[in-house]
Length: 300
Image (cartoon, rainbow, N blue to C red):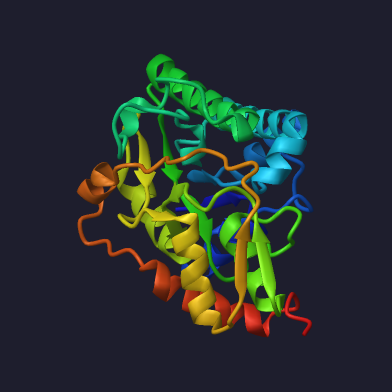
């Protein structure tokens, strides 16, 4: 199969290349996904058998809270352009990445499953981003119903791992925690209370899962890809601190706590991929920190 991957220079795209180097990886330098005509023209010329859509504007809780309009416009436009271009030029297979951020802020039961996607609004701290992912799911399933297309979505939980973005202004939580704890010598301060719970998915696990999903996932379900571990922010900070092996004072601001919990049920994914084994958070942090120590982010 000739497979094109959008977001090829992003966090997941770079790691996916280690597993499927035979696929074609697009970055913004190759194609502007905000240009609808350009996307149609490119797909028409390349005639892929499948598109894996990973491209997105992503960021941490602070970045989402401060720039919601940027997150909404860029993600909504990219998603519509890619999905509609696949339909327009007759790409037979599309697999697109959603996010568990698209699921409701509060639900009566946890872990939730795929049927809960539209049961309430996403968390206020990532409302714009979450709705763009829901919009893409609706778009894809509209095409499935109207044209019978083999297009589907998956929803990964929070990601971390080697080659993540460790910029403290725009990074996700685990990357920020690694950098802050590594660089600190005394007191480290984190947003919120430390109580919210998160499933953290090691990036290489997702990259192993994507080719499986491309082959096996052919339904309208926004299949959740997440480990069973559901740890508090405080537990994760303590785990990272132990691995870094520093005696630090850790404080929480009590502000901008974000969604309390959003753990998803991975049963549908494991039905599709029963042989799959997730990396534990401790093992994933060891691998991530080993990479970080050798990276350009580590300037100490």
